[in-house]
Image 1 (cartoon, rainbow, N blue to C red):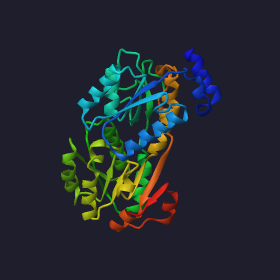
Image 2: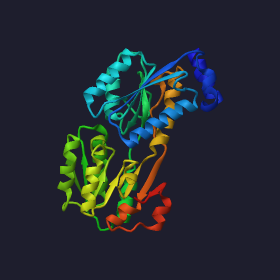
Image 3: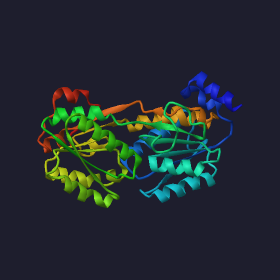
Image 4: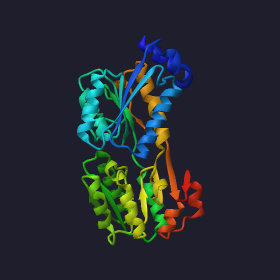
Length: 327
């Protein structure tokens, strides 16, 4: 019957056929967690909820959506995962690598599906054995590598004389380590100097930002949860020193970076729910589903931030941006 339900979904289309394939009278329980409260992660969560709703899973009707925030603490992420198991959720949806790692460890040896999101490299993080094959376990998810080369193209276009690029990141975050490694390789391929300042907590971020002044010509940030929670501190430093700031965090341009180049967070959440969570809730074995890469990446620009750094934005670049902010 579970396979029949999934076949109906695939045959009728996710948006039109899911509700009819659900078990009548059943209330589905989803445990969703993220590492911190952050605009990008919150947009992903909103997209995930809307993706479930479009497929017929509605809070207050046939869905209990249990949301938990780890407040930046990996220990809390473990406790949250264990709580979801104790609550007998039908599916755990961890957002960010620390939460996904905690959920996979907690659910190992159980039949509770873990469908992760907000992860850069799930193989390196130990979540799945390969990107091109099903896990064969109770785990699958969605992932994405930031468009590193494209971001360096933007930096080169806006800051053609920049020779030293700096970053701040938490090296204990797998996503951030992947970003730093790939960005360093890209910088060196272009003959640029790559300068890294690791941090261990958000309290270290302002000191690290100050430490880059005079040493770099531009700062490029990854999708680092520790740095994101102290973004305003970085922004103050770069504004005070007229230093260009770029980021792979899709919300950074709106918050004051000159440019951000990352996945469309909301659409990522919708796709995560539609392509993975919904089929699993309807009975498909997550171990048979190949992890799904992100589909949508957006360039966003901030004219006020560019003006503050005394950098003109070429009209041809502005035309390619998904959004342009001016504050």
